[in-house]
Image 1 (cartoon, rainbow, N blue to C red):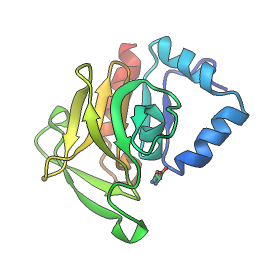
Image 2 (cartoon, rainbow, N blue to C red; image 1 turned 90 degrees about the horizontal axis):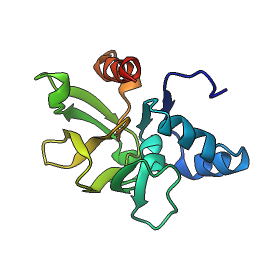
Image 3 (spheres, rainbow, N blue to C red; image 1 turned 180 degrees about the vertical axis):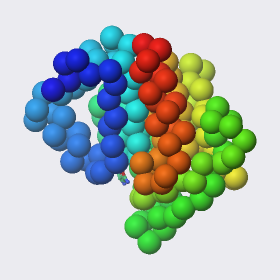
Length: 158
Ligand code: GLN
């Protein structure tokens, strides 16, 4: 089903389950090949965890396309899930309304990584490295389509 795709969104969910399914269905190499072909890959929340080169609890990386270290469940348990304004300069001056559901946070960014978004306290919640982008929050749960447009632009550029 990956053949002919212009890009791939790896959604939120539970990264432990998703990593098992990636292994069971042999998806690791085909998805890495899709990424290597230049197609944009967009990971949201658990998808961001799958795209990270390093996971701070020691889990093995799955698709190490973005040189960051992520911490899973960084804001706490489900009760600590929250919504908040996120500054995303590449999308304009109006902040993005971020929905964070047992979200990860980025603890370290490599020199090849662009920081796309931060919270007011400076914590990094969206990044890009080449044709891979990742957000700790869920742009698909709001009516603001700027992240979707950004991703589609990446697809048409590739
Ligand atoms: N907490 C989940 C994980 O660690 C991610 C949650 C989400 O995708 N909304 O995989």
